Image 1 (cartoon, rainbow, N blue to C red):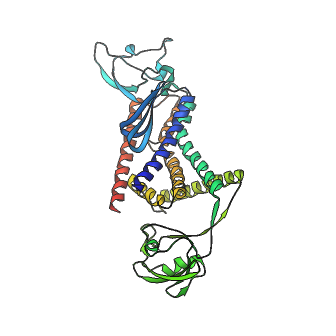
Image 2 (cartoon, rainbow, N blue to C red):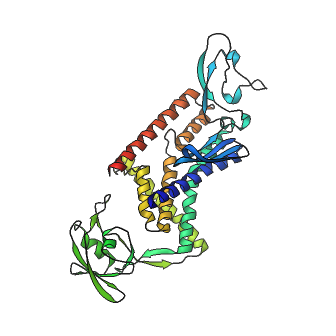
Amino acid sequence: MTTLVAAIFVFGLLVLVHELGHFTVAKLTGMRVDEFAIGFGPKLWSRKYGETLYAIRAVPLGGFNRIAGMDYEIVERMGNQDAEKDEDGSQQGGWKRYVPSAGRSDTIMVPDEEGAGERAYFRRPIWARMMMILAGSFMNFVLPLFIFWGIFYFSGVATPSPEPVVGSVVADRPAALAGLQSKDRILTIDGREVSHWEDISRYIQGADGKPFKLTYQRDGEVRSTTLIPEQEPNTKRAIIGITSSAEIYQPGFFEAAELAVKKVGFVLAAMLGALAQLVQGTGAAELSGPVGVAQMAGEVAHQGILPLLNFAAFLSLNLGLINLLPVPALDGGHFVMLILEGLRGKPLGPKVMYYIQAVGVTLLVSLMIFTTFNDLMK
């Protein structure tokens, strides 16, 4: 149940913020938003305010804004003489909309403006469409700023202590099963003295699956227990499920904001570096799908609300960055097509854009299936 609640919270928060970015800029730039939805599939709840339907759907793995003029419809094409024209005689928004009439015909794809007129997406200026496309990722970068600021300002900045004192114990891990608790001071491991926190990790490496004796001090009383370390799947390191204690520094309002900006910059730089290594073939890809992310959210949630918020902030930055990649069906792919439209002075053909998006969706669905299969096999 914890995993389910944590996953819905994380996915819901990230999707809400991302889609809210698109929604807000679309409204501000004069586009007509017909639906703002969190989730996919059947509607669980919906209500219409003004011209927009707000909905919560059954599958909380995404969301969307249905903006008039972003989708395409297939219409019957006749000769150019049958093309609808605006009142001033010009073609609609640079696109030819054809209507059936007598004679030979075939079909074409055109943007479906759904009666939105000048408020249709494809009729808005390129700069407005660019801003709307980028707004989702922008909000995914803004959210961690507020999360990190709140953590720093209200909970302080935790600096790991070098002392061998347990800060927290992860549930259902070897340390918890052996009875270790927060604030226990570890004295020896298999008779070897522990004077620094780093000694713990150094002494247990290579001991996964093998029992060892640990002595510790609690409330002035020396106790002992036996532990069997387990192997962490990703790093292949032996772990017992404890974190170090921390020294807390309480920053002021503006200092906390400065620290939040620095942390977001540091995390983004690290992510870009990892992405560059992946492209160059010097780094390994560690892909997780919705199932894997949900499992991680559940594990982090057992440690408390602050670790879960930290996890959501890191995931938000990851989502914002990935969405900017120039891949069809992602925001970055839409942005590249708008750049091409600006350079050409006219949009790509509707059929070309339709098939580009279809290829992008196919790739994304294939990747989701692949990562989900990997998650289930772990």
